[in-house]
Image (cartoon, rainbow, N blue to C red; front, side):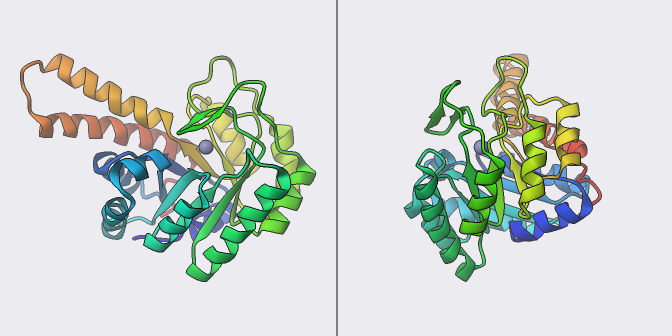
Length: 283
Ligand SMILES: [Zn+2]
């Protein structure tokens, strides 16, 4: 069933688990992610990056995803990930995304609050949940590039003020995780996460999930993370699955068989994360 992300996150907070938000890139990856969630009886968030929205086209993408979500036997939310453009955020809200992320974290604190609050006010009338970000998460996400050393972690005071003044329904503070693949051991600031959690009532989101160890994930969930984003791991499962299949079946040229193989890889990747996040058997 197609549900609002706010409702999924409220249940996650109450139940002490996190819902995985997986960046899907097409129908194959979306269907595989939903199958993993169904087998594990877990709620799931399908995320679309701005690149995916532009590549497939917003109108077609939402028809495809909402149809898969409606047919699913578990709750599925469809979320727009990291969008810096308020116009595209508005378009996706109008077309039927159940939640959106407006990312103005590279702007000044006041400008971030102003734009995020505007979107939240419009979203409330449409029944859409809005995620906002404070601080900048290092790495590359779509066309948003934050170099190492340029990252700014969120502060507890800033977080409290941001959430209070914007009214966001989900909040992503920069706590030391990174987009893409980690080059060294990630320095996740659990102390900062705890301090923010104590001051902010809104569900917290962790970005840059790929490459974090199972121990780090479990600690974040125990500390109260309600949504954990997984993007790069899906891309790797997809691309490596395809490479492996074509290498092992040279000359076969059977796209349906290849798709089935790749979908299994994506499904396994999603399933592993669902299990670690503790959302299995919670649908
Ligand atoms: Zn992110």
